[in-house]
Length: 494
Image 1 (cartoon, rainbow, N blue to C red):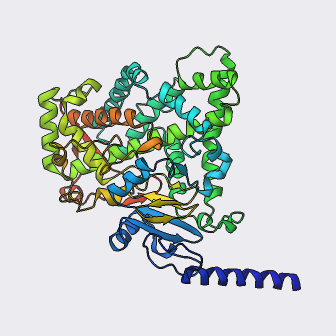
Image 2 (image 1 turned 135 degrees about the vertical axis):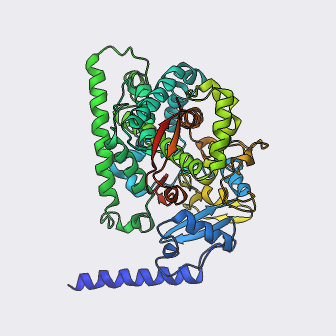
Image 3 (image 1 turned 60 degrees about the vertical axis):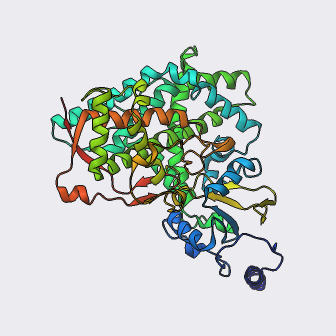
Protein backbone atom coordinates (compact mmCIF):
# COMPACT_ATOMS: atom_id res chain seq x y z
CA UNK A 1 0.00 0.00 0.00
CA UNK A 2 2.84 2.39 0.90
CA UNK A 3 4.48 1.64 -2.44
CA UNK A 4 1.26 2.45 -4.30
CA UNK A 5 0.98 5.80 -2.49
CA UNK A 6 4.58 6.61 -3.41
CA UNK A 7 3.95 5.75 -7.08
CA UNK A 8 0.77 7.86 -7.23
CA UNK A 9 2.52 10.75 -5.48
CA UNK A 10 5.45 10.58 -7.87
CA UNK A 11 3.14 10.58 -10.89
CA UNK A 12 1.24 13.60 -9.58
CA UNK A 13 4.48 15.43 -8.88
CA UNK A 14 5.72 14.61 -12.37
CA UNK A 15 2.47 15.82 -13.95
CA UNK A 16 2.50 19.07 -11.94
CA UNK A 17 6.14 19.71 -12.83
CA UNK A 18 5.51 19.09 -16.51
CA UNK A 19 2.49 21.39 -16.38
CA UNK A 20 4.52 24.19 -14.76
CA UNK A 21 7.26 23.84 -17.35
CA UNK A 22 4.66 23.86 -20.14
CA UNK A 23 2.89 26.94 -18.86
CA UNK A 24 5.98 29.02 -18.12
CA UNK A 25 8.08 27.68 -20.98
CA UNK A 26 11.13 26.68 -18.90
CA UNK A 27 13.75 25.05 -21.06
CA UNK A 28 12.00 25.92 -24.33
CA UNK A 29 13.73 27.64 -27.26
CA UNK A 30 12.77 31.30 -27.38
CA UNK A 31 12.09 31.35 -31.11
CA UNK A 32 9.30 28.79 -31.43
CA UNK A 33 6.52 29.44 -33.96
CA UNK A 34 3.43 31.22 -32.63
CA UNK A 35 0.44 29.26 -31.43
CA UNK A 36 -2.33 29.14 -28.83
CA UNK A 37 -1.27 28.96 -25.19
CA UNK A 38 -1.42 25.35 -23.97
CA UNK A 39 -3.34 24.26 -20.92
CA UNK A 40 -1.59 22.15 -18.29
CA UNK A 41 -1.27 18.47 -19.26
CA UNK A 42 -3.69 18.49 -22.24
CA UNK A 43 -2.00 21.35 -24.07
CA UNK A 44 -4.19 22.42 -27.00
CA UNK A 45 -6.10 19.17 -27.44
CA UNK A 46 -9.36 20.82 -26.49
CA UNK A 47 -9.12 22.99 -29.61
CA UNK A 48 -9.15 20.14 -32.16
CA UNK A 49 -12.82 19.06 -32.14
CA UNK A 50 -14.17 16.34 -34.41
CA UNK A 51 -13.19 18.25 -37.60
CA UNK A 52 -9.49 18.99 -36.97
CA UNK A 53 -8.84 20.34 -40.47
CA UNK A 54 -11.45 23.06 -39.89
CA UNK A 55 -10.36 23.80 -36.31
CA UNK A 56 -6.73 24.14 -37.39
CA UNK A 57 -7.75 26.42 -40.28
CA UNK A 58 -9.52 28.77 -37.84
CA UNK A 59 -6.53 28.80 -35.49
CA UNK A 60 -4.18 29.58 -38.38
CA UNK A 61 -6.17 32.74 -39.11
CA UNK A 62 -5.25 33.91 -35.61
CA UNK A 63 -1.70 32.59 -35.22
CA UNK A 64 -0.45 32.46 -38.80
CA UNK A 65 0.48 29.90 -41.48
CA UNK A 66 3.35 28.44 -39.40
CA UNK A 67 1.75 27.49 -36.10
CA UNK A 68 2.93 25.33 -33.22
CA UNK A 69 0.50 23.53 -30.94
CA UNK A 70 1.06 21.30 -27.96
CA UNK A 71 -1.19 18.27 -28.31
CA UNK A 72 -0.77 16.45 -25.02
CA UNK A 73 2.95 15.73 -24.88
CA UNK A 74 3.49 16.13 -28.64
CA UNK A 75 4.65 19.29 -30.40
CA UNK A 76 2.65 19.73 -33.60
CA UNK A 77 3.53 22.10 -36.42
CA UNK A 78 0.68 23.13 -38.74
CA UNK A 79 1.52 24.58 -42.15
CA UNK A 80 -1.24 26.58 -43.86
CA UNK A 81 0.31 28.56 -46.72
CA UNK A 82 1.86 27.66 -50.10
CA UNK A 83 5.15 29.40 -49.26
CA UNK A 84 5.58 27.49 -45.98
CA UNK A 85 4.47 24.24 -47.66
CA UNK A 86 7.13 24.72 -50.34
CA UNK A 87 9.79 25.16 -47.65
CA UNK A 88 8.71 21.96 -45.85
CA UNK A 89 7.91 19.74 -48.83
CA UNK A 90 10.57 20.88 -51.28
CA UNK A 91 13.38 23.11 -50.01
CA UNK A 92 13.82 21.23 -46.72
CA UNK A 93 12.19 18.00 -47.87
CA UNK A 94 14.89 15.74 -46.42
CA UNK A 95 14.61 17.25 -42.93
CA UNK A 96 10.83 16.77 -42.98
CA UNK A 97 10.63 13.45 -44.88
CA UNK A 98 10.18 11.05 -41.94
CA UNK A 99 6.64 10.00 -41.08
CA UNK A 100 5.01 10.56 -37.72
CA UNK A 101 3.38 7.15 -37.35
CA UNK A 102 0.02 7.02 -35.52
CA UNK A 103 0.23 4.46 -32.73
CA UNK A 104 -2.75 2.57 -34.15
CA UNK A 105 -0.67 1.60 -37.19
CA UNK A 106 1.50 -0.55 -34.94
CA UNK A 107 -1.34 -3.06 -35.37
CA UNK A 108 0.06 -6.11 -37.19
CA UNK A 109 3.33 -4.09 -37.44
CA UNK A 110 1.92 -2.47 -40.57
CA UNK A 111 4.10 0.64 -40.16
CA UNK A 112 7.29 -1.47 -40.38
CA UNK A 113 6.44 -2.75 -43.88
CA UNK A 114 4.39 0.05 -45.43
CA UNK A 115 5.72 2.31 -48.19
CA UNK A 116 3.38 5.02 -46.86
CA UNK A 117 4.75 4.97 -43.30
CA UNK A 118 8.34 3.74 -43.48
CA UNK A 119 11.07 6.37 -43.10
CA UNK A 120 12.82 7.30 -46.33
CA UNK A 121 15.38 4.49 -45.96
CA UNK A 122 16.64 1.73 -48.28
CA UNK A 123 13.58 -0.46 -47.60
CA UNK A 124 11.30 2.43 -48.49
CA UNK A 125 13.26 3.09 -51.68
CA UNK A 126 12.93 -0.56 -52.71
CA UNK A 127 9.16 -0.57 -52.24
CA UNK A 128 8.80 2.81 -53.91
CA UNK A 129 10.81 1.55 -56.90
CA UNK A 130 8.48 -1.45 -57.24
CA UNK A 131 5.50 0.92 -57.37
CA UNK A 132 6.96 3.39 -59.83
CA UNK A 133 8.36 0.70 -62.12
CA UNK A 134 5.56 -1.86 -62.16
CA UNK A 135 2.38 0.16 -61.66
CA UNK A 136 2.78 3.89 -62.12
CA UNK A 137 5.45 4.24 -64.80
CA UNK A 138 4.37 5.66 -68.17
CA UNK A 139 4.97 2.32 -69.91
CA UNK A 140 3.02 0.36 -67.28
CA UNK A 141 0.11 2.79 -67.41
CA UNK A 142 0.03 2.74 -71.21
CA UNK A 143 0.10 -1.06 -71.18
CA UNK A 144 -3.04 -1.19 -69.03
CA UNK A 145 -5.00 1.50 -70.88
CA UNK A 146 -7.48 -1.06 -72.27
CA UNK A 147 -8.07 -2.45 -68.77
CA UNK A 148 -8.99 0.99 -67.45
CA UNK A 149 -11.31 1.58 -70.39
CA UNK A 150 -13.00 -1.77 -69.78
CA UNK A 151 -13.58 -0.95 -66.11
CA UNK A 152 -15.20 2.38 -67.02
CA UNK A 153 -17.41 0.49 -69.50
CA UNK A 154 -18.49 -1.78 -66.65
CA UNK A 155 -19.29 1.24 -64.45
CA UNK A 156 -21.56 2.69 -67.15
CA UNK A 157 -23.19 -0.72 -67.73
CA UNK A 158 -23.94 -0.98 -64.01
CA UNK A 159 -25.55 2.49 -64.01
CA UNK A 160 -27.56 1.62 -67.13
CA UNK A 161 -28.85 -1.52 -65.43
CA UNK A 162 -29.87 0.58 -62.39
CA UNK A 163 -31.73 3.02 -64.65
CA UNK A 164 -33.72 0.19 -66.23
CA UNK A 165 -35.04 -0.83 -62.82
CA UNK A 166 -35.48 2.77 -61.64
CA UNK A 167 -32.89 2.26 -58.90
CA UNK A 168 -30.62 4.99 -57.61
CA UNK A 169 -26.85 4.66 -57.82
CA UNK A 170 -24.63 5.17 -54.79
CA UNK A 171 -21.91 7.08 -56.65
CA UNK A 172 -19.17 6.56 -54.06
CA UNK A 173 -19.80 2.83 -53.82
CA UNK A 174 -19.96 2.37 -57.59
CA UNK A 175 -16.72 4.32 -58.05
CA UNK A 176 -15.09 2.32 -55.28
CA UNK A 177 -16.04 -0.96 -56.97
CA UNK A 178 -14.59 0.26 -60.27
CA UNK A 179 -11.34 1.37 -58.62
CA UNK A 180 -11.12 -1.84 -56.60
CA UNK A 181 -11.42 -4.06 -59.67
CA UNK A 182 -9.01 -1.93 -61.66
CA UNK A 183 -6.38 -2.28 -58.94
CA UNK A 184 -7.12 -5.94 -58.24
CA UNK A 185 -6.62 -6.77 -61.92
CA UNK A 186 -3.36 -4.83 -61.87
CA UNK A 187 -2.20 -6.50 -58.66
CA UNK A 188 -3.61 -10.05 -58.77
CA UNK A 189 -5.20 -10.33 -62.26
CA UNK A 190 -8.79 -10.79 -61.05
CA UNK A 191 -11.89 -8.87 -60.00
CA UNK A 192 -12.51 -8.74 -56.26
CA UNK A 193 -16.08 -7.47 -56.68
CA UNK A 194 -18.86 -8.19 -59.14
CA UNK A 195 -18.76 -5.21 -61.53
CA UNK A 196 -22.45 -5.53 -62.45
CA UNK A 197 -23.88 -5.97 -58.96
CA UNK A 198 -23.83 -3.84 -55.83
CA UNK A 199 -20.99 -5.84 -54.31
CA UNK A 200 -17.63 -5.03 -52.74
CA UNK A 201 -19.30 -3.61 -49.63
CA UNK A 202 -17.02 -5.54 -47.26
CA UNK A 203 -13.87 -4.24 -48.95
CA UNK A 204 -15.10 -0.65 -48.87
CA UNK A 205 -15.97 -0.92 -45.19
CA UNK A 206 -12.52 -2.29 -44.39
CA UNK A 207 -10.65 0.48 -46.23
CA UNK A 208 -13.01 3.21 -45.07
CA UNK A 209 -12.74 2.05 -41.46
CA UNK A 210 -8.95 1.97 -41.66
CA UNK A 211 -8.83 5.55 -42.97
CA UNK A 212 -11.32 6.82 -40.37
CA UNK A 213 -9.66 5.08 -37.41
CA UNK A 214 -6.14 6.21 -38.36
CA UNK A 215 -7.39 9.78 -38.85
CA UNK A 216 -9.18 10.02 -35.50
CA UNK A 217 -7.49 12.02 -32.76
CA UNK A 218 -6.11 9.24 -30.55
CA UNK A 219 -5.19 9.95 -26.92
CA UNK A 220 -2.37 7.41 -27.17
CA UNK A 221 -0.65 9.55 -29.83
CA UNK A 222 -0.69 12.53 -27.46
CA UNK A 223 0.03 10.60 -24.25
CA UNK A 224 2.23 7.59 -25.13
CA UNK A 225 2.00 6.38 -21.53
CA UNK A 226 -1.56 5.23 -22.38
CA UNK A 227 -0.34 2.86 -25.11
CA UNK A 228 -1.09 -0.35 -23.25
CA UNK A 229 -4.54 0.84 -22.21
CA UNK A 230 -5.78 1.93 -25.68
CA UNK A 231 -8.54 3.97 -23.97
CA UNK A 232 -10.54 4.67 -27.15
CA UNK A 233 -10.13 1.18 -28.57
CA UNK A 234 -8.71 2.56 -31.83
CA UNK A 235 -5.82 0.13 -32.09
CA UNK A 236 -8.08 -2.79 -31.21
CA UNK A 237 -10.57 -1.89 -33.97
CA UNK A 238 -7.82 -1.16 -36.48
CA UNK A 239 -6.19 -4.50 -35.69
CA UNK A 240 -9.49 -6.15 -36.58
CA UNK A 241 -9.89 -4.24 -39.87
CA UNK A 242 -6.29 -4.73 -41.00
CA UNK A 243 -6.44 -8.38 -39.93
CA UNK A 244 -9.45 -8.97 -42.18
CA UNK A 245 -7.60 -7.51 -45.16
CA UNK A 246 -4.41 -9.45 -44.40
CA UNK A 247 -6.43 -12.68 -44.27
CA UNK A 248 -7.73 -11.94 -47.78
CA UNK A 249 -4.19 -11.11 -48.94
CA UNK A 250 -2.87 -14.37 -47.52
CA UNK A 251 -5.49 -16.28 -49.48
CA UNK A 252 -4.51 -14.51 -52.72
CA UNK A 253 -0.79 -15.13 -52.11
CA UNK A 254 -1.31 -18.81 -51.23
CA UNK A 255 -3.51 -19.29 -54.29
CA UNK A 256 -0.77 -17.89 -56.52
CA UNK A 257 1.99 -19.95 -54.87
CA UNK A 258 -0.02 -23.13 -55.43
CA UNK A 259 0.07 -22.37 -59.14
CA UNK A 260 3.89 -22.73 -58.89
CA UNK A 261 4.40 -21.04 -62.27
CA UNK A 262 4.66 -17.28 -61.77
CA UNK A 263 3.95 -16.19 -65.33
CA UNK A 264 1.17 -13.64 -64.93
CA UNK A 265 2.01 -10.03 -65.65
CA UNK A 266 0.88 -8.47 -62.40
CA UNK A 267 2.23 -6.89 -59.23
CA UNK A 268 1.88 -10.01 -57.10
CA UNK A 269 4.19 -11.97 -59.39
CA UNK A 270 6.75 -9.18 -59.34
CA UNK A 271 6.66 -9.13 -55.54
CA UNK A 272 6.89 -12.93 -55.23
CA UNK A 273 9.86 -13.07 -57.58
CA UNK A 274 11.65 -10.35 -55.60
CA UNK A 275 10.89 -12.14 -52.32
CA UNK A 276 12.34 -15.38 -53.72
CA UNK A 277 15.46 -13.79 -55.22
CA UNK A 278 16.09 -11.18 -52.49
CA UNK A 279 14.15 -12.10 -49.34
CA UNK A 280 15.93 -9.33 -47.40
CA UNK A 281 14.28 -6.77 -49.70
CA UNK A 282 10.74 -8.12 -49.56
CA UNK A 283 8.84 -10.77 -47.61
CA UNK A 284 5.19 -11.72 -47.19
CA UNK A 285 4.61 -8.96 -44.63
CA UNK A 286 5.89 -6.36 -47.08
CA UNK A 287 3.62 -7.73 -49.79
CA UNK A 288 0.51 -7.61 -47.59
CA UNK A 289 1.28 -4.09 -46.36
CA UNK A 290 1.97 -2.97 -49.93
CA UNK A 291 -1.43 -4.34 -50.94
CA UNK A 292 -3.09 -2.46 -48.09
CA UNK A 293 -1.34 0.76 -49.13
CA UNK A 294 -2.36 0.33 -52.77
CA UNK A 295 -5.95 -0.73 -52.22
CA UNK A 296 -6.54 1.70 -49.37
CA UNK A 297 -5.13 4.77 -51.10
CA UNK A 298 -6.14 3.84 -54.64
CA UNK A 299 -9.78 3.05 -53.96
CA UNK A 300 -10.82 5.32 -51.11
CA UNK A 301 -9.31 8.55 -52.44
CA UNK A 302 -10.52 7.97 -56.01
CA UNK A 303 -14.09 7.10 -55.03
CA UNK A 304 -14.27 10.00 -52.56
CA UNK A 305 -13.04 12.49 -55.18
CA UNK A 306 -15.51 11.25 -57.78
CA UNK A 307 -18.37 11.44 -55.28
CA UNK A 308 -17.46 15.02 -54.31
CA UNK A 309 -17.12 15.99 -57.99
CA UNK A 310 -20.54 14.59 -58.88
CA UNK A 311 -22.07 16.32 -55.85
CA UNK A 312 -20.60 19.69 -56.79
CA UNK A 313 -21.66 19.37 -60.44
CA UNK A 314 -25.21 18.45 -59.40
CA UNK A 315 -25.33 21.51 -57.14
CA UNK A 316 -24.16 23.82 -59.93
CA UNK A 317 -26.46 23.76 -62.98
CA UNK A 318 -24.11 26.02 -64.97
CA UNK A 319 -21.20 23.63 -64.41
CA UNK A 320 -23.30 20.63 -65.44
CA UNK A 321 -24.51 22.34 -68.61
CA UNK A 322 -21.05 23.50 -69.64
CA UNK A 323 -19.52 20.07 -69.00
CA UNK A 324 -22.20 18.33 -71.04
CA UNK A 325 -21.79 20.85 -73.85
CA UNK A 326 -18.06 20.20 -74.03
CA UNK A 327 -18.51 16.42 -73.93
CA UNK A 328 -21.13 16.44 -76.67
CA UNK A 329 -18.99 18.67 -78.88
CA UNK A 330 -15.73 16.74 -78.44
CA UNK A 331 -16.74 13.06 -78.22
CA UNK A 332 -20.45 12.96 -78.98
CA UNK A 333 -23.49 12.81 -76.74
CA UNK A 334 -23.86 9.51 -74.89
CA UNK A 335 -20.35 8.27 -75.66
CA UNK A 336 -18.02 6.88 -73.00
CA UNK A 337 -14.88 8.95 -72.42
CA UNK A 338 -11.66 7.23 -73.43
CA UNK A 339 -8.28 8.04 -71.96
CA UNK A 340 -7.07 9.72 -75.15
CA UNK A 341 -10.12 12.03 -75.01
CA UNK A 342 -9.26 13.55 -71.65
CA UNK A 343 -6.71 16.12 -72.83
CA UNK A 344 -9.29 17.37 -75.36
CA UNK A 345 -11.70 18.14 -72.49
CA UNK A 346 -10.17 21.11 -70.63
CA UNK A 347 -13.34 22.03 -68.75
CA UNK A 348 -13.71 18.48 -67.44
CA UNK A 349 -10.14 18.66 -66.13
CA UNK A 350 -10.97 22.01 -64.52
CA UNK A 351 -13.85 20.34 -62.66
CA UNK A 352 -11.45 17.71 -61.33
CA UNK A 353 -8.93 20.36 -60.21
CA UNK A 354 -11.64 22.44 -58.55
CA UNK A 355 -12.91 19.36 -56.72
CA UNK A 356 -9.39 18.59 -55.49
CA UNK A 357 -9.01 22.22 -54.35
CA UNK A 358 -12.17 22.22 -52.26
CA UNK A 359 -12.15 18.56 -51.20
CA UNK A 360 -8.53 17.38 -50.99
CA UNK A 361 -8.53 13.58 -50.57
CA UNK A 362 -6.10 13.77 -47.61
CA UNK A 363 -6.89 17.14 -46.00
CA UNK A 364 -3.83 17.29 -43.72
CA UNK A 365 -1.58 15.09 -45.86
CA UNK A 366 0.04 12.17 -44.03
CA UNK A 367 1.82 13.54 -40.94
CA UNK A 368 5.57 14.08 -41.06
CA UNK A 369 8.10 14.35 -38.25
CA UNK A 370 11.42 16.13 -37.77
CA UNK A 371 14.10 13.73 -36.52
CA UNK A 372 16.30 16.54 -35.26
CA UNK A 373 15.83 20.22 -34.47
CA UNK A 374 15.48 22.33 -37.61
CA UNK A 375 15.01 25.99 -38.51
CA UNK A 376 11.99 27.13 -40.57
CA UNK A 377 11.68 30.79 -41.54
CA UNK A 378 13.75 31.70 -38.47
CA UNK A 379 11.64 29.62 -36.10
CA UNK A 380 13.07 26.65 -34.20
CA UNK A 381 11.17 23.41 -34.78
CA UNK A 382 12.00 21.03 -31.91
CA UNK A 383 13.15 17.47 -32.50
CA UNK A 384 10.25 14.99 -32.65
CA UNK A 385 7.66 17.57 -33.77
CA UNK A 386 4.90 16.13 -35.95
CA UNK A 387 3.98 18.19 -39.00
CA UNK A 388 0.62 18.68 -40.72
CA UNK A 389 0.14 20.52 -44.01
CA UNK A 390 -3.45 21.77 -44.02
CA UNK A 391 -4.44 21.48 -47.68
CA UNK A 392 -8.08 22.04 -46.79
CA UNK A 393 -7.26 25.45 -45.31
CA UNK A 394 -5.04 26.42 -48.25
CA UNK A 395 -7.72 25.41 -50.75
CA UNK A 396 -10.26 27.75 -49.13
CA UNK A 397 -7.97 30.66 -48.33
CA UNK A 398 -9.47 33.88 -49.78
CA UNK A 399 -5.99 35.43 -50.04
CA UNK A 400 -5.06 32.67 -52.52
CA UNK A 401 -8.37 32.02 -54.30
CA UNK A 402 -10.98 34.52 -55.42
CA UNK A 403 -14.46 33.46 -54.24
CA UNK A 404 -12.69 30.67 -52.38
CA UNK A 405 -15.86 29.02 -51.05
CA UNK A 406 -17.55 28.83 -54.46
CA UNK A 407 -17.18 25.90 -56.85
CA UNK A 408 -15.88 27.60 -60.00
CA UNK A 409 -13.98 25.30 -62.39
CA UNK A 410 -13.59 28.27 -64.77
CA UNK A 411 -10.85 29.65 -62.52
CA UNK A 412 -8.48 27.05 -63.97
CA UNK A 413 -9.22 27.61 -67.67
CA UNK A 414 -6.65 30.37 -68.02
CA UNK A 415 -4.39 29.03 -65.26
CA UNK A 416 -1.25 26.93 -65.52
CA UNK A 417 -1.67 25.57 -61.99
CA UNK A 418 -1.37 21.80 -61.89
CA UNK A 419 -1.77 19.10 -59.23
CA UNK A 420 1.57 17.35 -59.78
CA UNK A 421 3.44 18.82 -56.82
CA UNK A 422 5.08 21.84 -58.46
CA UNK A 423 2.39 24.44 -57.68
CA UNK A 424 2.09 24.74 -53.92
CA UNK A 425 -1.32 26.42 -54.00
CA UNK A 426 -2.75 23.08 -55.14
CA UNK A 427 -1.19 19.96 -53.58
CA UNK A 428 -3.85 17.22 -53.39
CA UNK A 429 -1.16 14.53 -53.84
CA UNK A 430 1.56 16.20 -51.80
CA UNK A 431 5.01 17.09 -53.12
CA UNK A 432 8.66 16.17 -52.83
CA UNK A 433 10.05 12.69 -52.30
CA UNK A 434 6.89 11.56 -50.49
CA UNK A 435 4.45 12.70 -53.16
CA UNK A 436 1.68 10.14 -53.72
CA UNK A 437 2.99 7.62 -56.28
CA UNK A 438 -0.56 6.96 -57.48
CA UNK A 439 -1.00 10.48 -58.87
CA UNK A 440 -0.59 9.46 -62.56
CA UNK A 441 -3.22 6.72 -62.26
CA UNK A 442 -5.70 8.91 -60.37
CA UNK A 443 -5.45 11.69 -62.95
CA UNK A 444 -6.27 9.20 -65.70
CA UNK A 445 -9.13 7.42 -63.96
CA UNK A 446 -11.06 10.26 -62.31
CA UNK A 447 -11.69 12.32 -65.48
CA UNK A 448 -12.63 9.17 -67.44
CA UNK A 449 -15.19 8.06 -64.85
CA UNK A 450 -16.60 11.54 -64.24
CA UNK A 451 -16.84 12.42 -67.93
CA UNK A 452 -18.46 9.08 -68.81
CA UNK A 453 -21.06 9.41 -66.06
CA UNK A 454 -21.95 12.97 -67.11
CA UNK A 455 -22.04 12.16 -70.83
CA UNK A 456 -24.00 8.90 -70.58
CA UNK A 457 -26.83 9.98 -68.28
CA UNK A 458 -28.87 12.77 -66.84
CA UNK A 459 -28.83 12.51 -63.07
CA UNK A 460 -32.08 13.08 -61.22
CA UNK A 461 -32.76 13.57 -57.55
CA UNK A 462 -36.32 12.99 -56.39
CA UNK A 463 -37.14 16.63 -55.60
CA UNK A 464 -35.72 20.05 -56.36
CA UNK A 465 -35.37 20.73 -52.63
CA UNK A 466 -33.24 17.61 -52.33
CA UNK A 467 -31.00 18.92 -55.10
CA UNK A 468 -30.65 22.33 -53.47
CA UNK A 469 -30.01 20.80 -50.07
CA UNK A 470 -27.42 18.17 -51.00
CA UNK A 471 -25.66 17.27 -47.77
CA UNK A 472 -22.04 18.49 -47.88
CA UNK A 473 -21.09 17.26 -44.41
CA UNK A 474 -17.59 15.82 -44.24
CA UNK A 475 -16.55 12.68 -42.40
CA UNK A 476 -13.03 13.31 -41.20
CA UNK A 477 -10.34 10.66 -41.29
CA UNK A 478 -6.99 10.42 -43.03
CA UNK A 479 -9.17 10.80 -46.13
CA UNK A 480 -12.05 13.25 -46.38
CA UNK A 481 -15.23 11.31 -47.03
CA UNK A 482 -18.75 12.50 -47.69
CA UNK A 483 -20.74 11.78 -44.53
CA UNK A 484 -24.00 11.11 -46.39
CA UNK A 485 -23.62 9.02 -49.57
CA UNK A 486 -24.65 10.60 -52.86
CA UNK A 487 -27.45 8.45 -54.30
CA UNK A 488 -28.94 9.62 -57.60
CA UNK A 489 -31.06 8.18 -60.40
CA UNK A 490 -29.43 7.82 -63.84
CA UNK A 491 -31.51 8.54 -66.96
CA UNK A 492 -29.79 7.30 -70.19
CA UNK A 493 -29.23 9.82 -72.96
CA UNK A 494 -29.54 7.26 -75.75
